[in-house]
Length: 311
Ligand code: GAR
Image 1: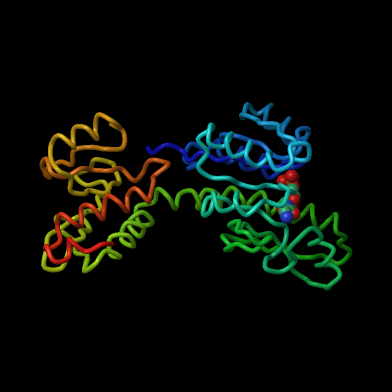
Image 2 (image 1 turned 135 degrees about the vertical axis):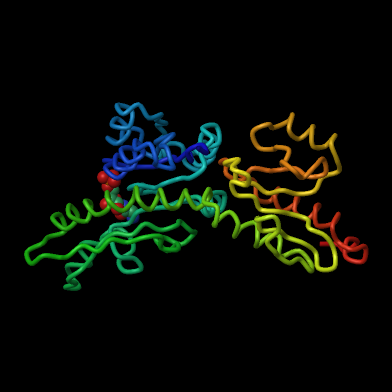
């Protein structure tokens, strides 16, 4: 099985959603592990709980550190080889540079049915508006507050006699159900064959005159009037790997790549010396690099008039 995706949970307080994420991750088939818990308040009660649960904890003081807090956090996330950041009651405004660095890899939970009732007083607003239904939302984090693409929601009924506290308590139960499920789906996006093929396809077909056709049972990409330059291989010949196959210069380069990173690169069976397999089902796939591999391979397959084109 592929490595579990390494998640950092950032909190500011109690950490009950963090706990839900940690406990869900104890299932063998959960695709993520909570590799780090941190936040902006060094004495947040949730940090003590994470520590008791033997999760690595990083205590940082956002107030004291000022802007250097974000740099310190970034370095620590890198050191811990974090793939995805999950905010769980993290109450600090995040600078755009941090959001950009984690674009597509950072999610949050909010106690309302977004886009309704963004911000801090969701439950009071629901009650004041006399709404009969509220709920919670997990969404991707973007530069605008509580505004990224919605990944999942759970509805919660508002009862006669509810106050903000009773409503918050019930919504929290729904949050604990929603967050682990959506986080698992979100991280699986990066290891699921269909999702990986979509990403490869988008890059391959963006190359001039590229087209797709199934060849030897795998989706293949070729240049019209030229040859195949890439194949997407999902458990081909039962090898259990999801990989991209691209052209290289020959056996020397093939050996060099495999010796440099034997986990990621492999010699594809039946393809010979001028192809390399690059696994896509390991964490940390560098898609910019995959794009370069595809472009280079495309050049070798394209007819001369195309191959000379600047891309
Ligand atoms: C949760 O209700 C969460 O949705 C909310 O803070 C609470 C944290 O509780 N987050 C926000 O309001 C973010 N805008 P927890 O620390 O027990 O998980």
